[in-house]
Image (tube, rainbow, N blue to C red; front, side, top):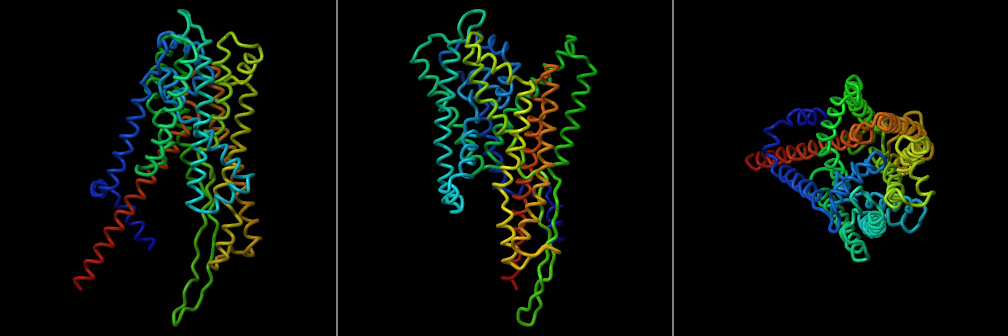
Length: 448
């Protein structure tokens, strides 16, 4: 069985891809959805003067707004219908997962399978709409108070403009949420992650050009640019290595008699990834940090209360408090999300149910404690790896004003989403070839 699977994996070539018609349809559907997303990042929000907005954004893009703009695929800098991006949905998902850990009702819904998952997803959608309305209104009010060199960014301030802005921004976020769900269901890969991925990758050429232009002007030393390029390649290689790293726990199954045949007696492995949470902790941490600070930066507008200015300055990119909160949130979500997706007690019960056991460990509670012990150590290493990859480039970015697209978070998202998507494509190809083998065997059986 293993040799057959290896042979199938080795035969995943262009010919196999050409025959997988369903996979090609999924890929084309995904690309079409991402093109729609990119087109939407250029549709301007009504009531905004783009020239004044560009002047204002260039003055404030060095802080958290630059990173928010990165996640939105440049839509925030142009203040388009997708300016809020997918961040309200991610924030709502964070809130729902936190509540499911403390609410017995939500915990019960999680155990109801597909029906409960649909209800939780529906609650997440409602939360997304509420957060988008709040954030959209905050941005609308903030834009009214922001003044550029040629005047206000809003052409006709007032309640009508605020309502228009809230409806436009909320509608854009809801559409992106729906688009991401369609990609997940009918395309390839995770739709929400691919939307963030597409936004980052689309802005990479411009970021590279601006970096080279800074080097030509003498703002950035040539040696620093070369170091950044080498560091980006090193980070990519490091992320690939760490994302593929796993701890394999040996699991054995005893022999049992079935009729005249002796069955079982096999050994297998229980793979535990070093980074079980994946790219979720940095995205969640960035979302929580960006939501209040971005609104504070918009609301302050350079003329707001002193405490808002202080908050914006203290939580600026590269500041000690910002880095401390960023690391703390990454570590917290690593442990939290790992606890959500992997339950040692359930895994131990399933092993005991089917007769499996870890050599040297008693089945049941002792196995659960052992799995929890191993998983805790792995999560500690994974959290340290994520914090290192995400925080060290942040220091360089804040010190040398390097574009955000070369930061650890953006590279981590791009590499991880690429690996997951390629893995799903390989799974579809394997399934297609297995179907072909099954059809051939049925035809041979009929002929025989």
